[in-house]
View (cartoon, helix red, strand yellow):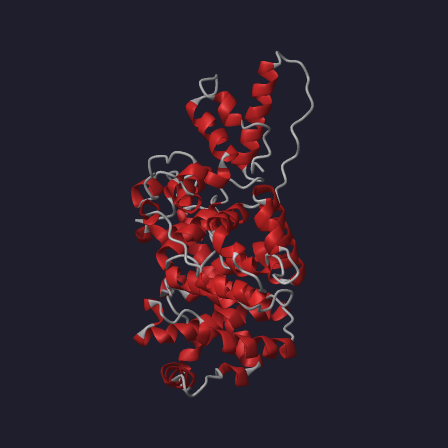
Length: 436
């Protein structure tokens, strides 16, 4: 199954043809989306993925700066996404700045000056939202921590006995006296917005109960949560509760703690992490619900059937329960299947949506293929290309690549218990050139 939906592969017919070099690459890259780049070839193997291309450099500060105009607008968004995809992620030194655009906290059309005001507005709104749920259910301000977890228990107890529970981590906005009048107006607007939101206290209590179970289970081995960093677990909790309070249609679902943890670790700001993950959750909200889970698993099953019918038939036997075990991989962006720094890079690649079937690059590749057909047929009208199925997102191909690499291990699984043991032991290593 070709991810582009282009018959026969546009890139092969275009080689040496009339397309400009840049456009030819776009079509070739799109047609081979499931196997492009050295970072994925490590999963597929050279034989499956073809000869490796020279590794592209990761997006760095100098290149990132060239994507803006003189007023600070990110005018080359498509180029940004391509650079992230082809370079295997973003240089850690600029990751904070890039993620604010990549995940929608800052519109690409905003100027530098506008972003300063927007940052202040988002800070004030978040502060008001947090105060609202704290006032409504003050008893839930105290995190329920098992006393055997002494480190977290002591920090939570100290945090909740002081006024620190009302503070916000990572404040980076201008709250100077000169902006007092502007801040007062923004606070008024935020209060009106927050007061209009209906919070179901009973449902929020239930969400907090689950959050308090999940937060201590977040990846505590990360340096970010070590020693004094254990305090960051309480910040993570506040973000999750704020989201649940103001997004009752989604509320809280297991797995969100790991996703928000990734945003908090990278951005190291409570406000920025909240807004970036909120925009991200809005896009994947259906994945947290049963119907969304079933839909994504069915798509993965269809893809695997096309790629390896024997493995597909084996995994869909009654005693193996299909590809349900892949849901965690897809929901968390393979967060625990790759080494931590590599998982962040892969998350950036997936979030770039550079070769998604509904992206500008995909549509451009299809347009180029139509034009090439038209020229080959000397203007004679031919049936349109088959419509691409935009449901096949790039993460599904990554998942398929992992299944194919682990094929022999999976074929040896005879029941669901063995399959769960396999899932918990999976660890994939991306080529060193991807992220380092």
